[in-house]
Image (cartoon, rainbow, N blue to C red; front, top):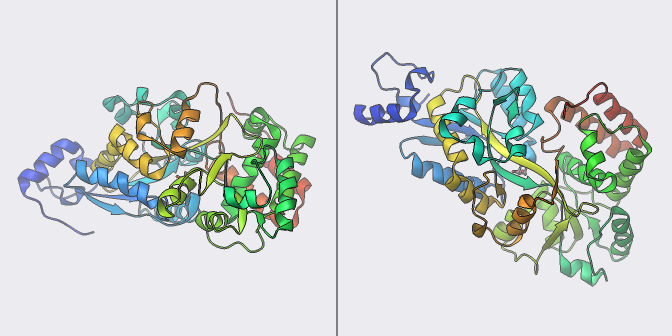
Amino acid sequence: MRRRSFPIIVAGVLCAALTACSSDGDGGDAGEPAEDAAKVEVFSWWEGPGEAEGYAALINRFKKDNPDIEFVNAAVAGGAGSNARTVLASRLAANDPPDAFQVHLGLEQEDDVKAGKVEDLTALFDQNGWRDKFSKPVLDAVTFGGKIYSVPVGIHRSNVLWFNAKTVQAAGITKPPATWSEFLKVAATLKSKNVVPLSIGPGWTQKHLLENVLLGELGAEKYSGLWKGKTSWLGPDVHAAVTMFTDVLAMSDIKTFGGDWQSALDKVIDGQAAYNVMGDWADAYLSRTRGLTFKTEYDATTSPGTDGVFNFLGDGFTVPKGAPHRAAADAWLKVCASKDGQEEFSVEKHSLPARIDAEETKFSGYPAIALEAWRNPDTVVVGSATHGTTVGSARGAEFDTALAKLVESGDVDAFQKALASTYAGYLASD
Ligand code: GAL
């Protein structure tokens, strides 16, 4: 561990400000400054183009507010945490935790909470008066057994269809498909003109597509019931919806895809493909990273069949048990929870601030539309399975296995049976 030396007075002030120097595990004899407390290692997956820039804004805010704490960025690339989660699990297993790590809001955190791997942050919330800064669904998504385990930072929408108006218009298509059946019709037209109807990426993006086909085909209530043990996975409606997914996937470039979510969007922008279903972090990539103008050079609408529905997911940070620099981790969480931090982060990441008091005037273009939908009381809010809102990590892993087999074999019955077994005996309390 690298050691830094500070004048006693600075360390003393820092100690008073951060409150936990004696208990952060940095050790040192009593009376010695806790030198390494002035460092925080934060683990995330915001490493790729389109999301690293948003994260940089949050880190910059942290550095401004905490000039004496060194920030160590331990991000591991891979959309939706596809690689990060494995790396984090092995670090936790090896008793080498970072000081804070990124989590999805929702059930994905539950296994870590139950396994006692993360700190209870309820007192931090109460000391800082954070409870009333978040809406009930957001606070509920980080509360387990009445205790709060992470700080929500940003919200995203999963059910978004991205397209290049020029490509679809050139194929004679004048409006985006409102249902997946309509999509299949326009897909046939696009194919006849040598345009890939839908671009896709690795496994997690296929799951992302599946959840939104299920949502569009089953409707909000039945879709939500799937993750609560209330909608039977064996029903004919689910059979039809999963069959629709296999039909939609057959219209994609699944046999030839390469890269992550950004590459799939590149194909839409470059005119090789017409549509892509992706969460609205895509907007940061298209507008800022690729420098394109919303509406003229790319466009977005709700994915087929989901008008008026917001398939929600969120990001936050939590602290693992045994974090080496707990006081600095709390300083990081304070920035994550702050109005400034959330606004600066979301403006760059094109997420929506998790706080209810963030100002709408700071958002324009696509994010302004998403924010209006998120705050509109008439919007029906459901939770993403792929991004952990409604599915815990153990069930999520079983889902991944079943989906990989479905994509390989096209066997819808086998997929239904696998998910029915995953959810056997489970009934959510609400
Ligand atoms: C999601 C995450 C988003 C974005 C996306 C792509 O799971 O919540 O913030 O990072 O993955 O990596």
